[in-house]
Image (cartoon, rainbow, N blue to C red):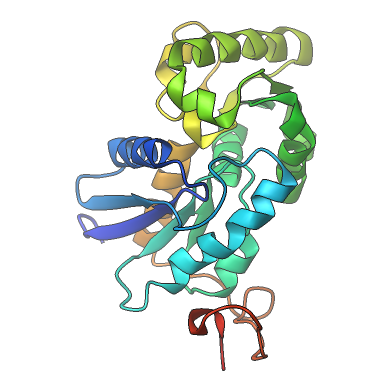
Amino acid sequence: MTGKHMKIKAINPNTTLEMTENIGRVANRYTADTTEVVAVSPERGPVSIESYYDDYLAVPGLVEEILNDTDEEFDAFIVACWGDPGIEACREVTEKPVVGIAEASMYVANMLGATFSVATILPRAKHFIEAAVKKTGLESQCASVRCTDLTVIETETAREATVEGLLEVSWQAIEEDGAEAICLGCAGMGGLDEALEAELPVPVVDSVGAAAVLAESLVQLGKSTSKVMTYKPPEPKLIKGYGELYQQGN
């Protein structure tokens, strides 16, 4: 399958288009020339995801972006928010691989160091980020979740301040928590790994880049999502208040 052309859809669950564009740039930077990553945002949803409320409101639009692939245009999907919102539901509605940037960054970091820390956004989101770590099963390898004072939007619009904030908490994670690798805990931080690695003694994992290459690898391996039990299609039932697109199996 070497050289196989593939197309991957990277879905930014929030509706900030500048961030979506950066996600596309970063993902295409790390994938092969024969791989095209198309970055999109749902038509509805919050402009940023910084709480469980934001997370849950983003999921219907996120799932819709996968359901809309009726002509089988894409080979895989990326959920480009560090909490991996709705990823289980996404896997239920497609056989294609679905990769979350949180799980991807942690899987990669776990192969680079005995421990890792997540450098992320404002403290409000700490429990939300820790929940993503637990869900992935790498809680024992995670030295810490370190929060900056940055909002999601600021990671995209205030790049210099974002680097400064990430450097500060990354040093704390390394010196105080024993972190041997750093995961960038927000899609808006995409493209900052090299600037941070120039100042830090540990590898820094760009979460968007990690998800892009892992999605690409799953397609190259010819793998699809298991449908034997957990991620099989939803049972047919009446779903009120949603369009025909959501009526899976009916």
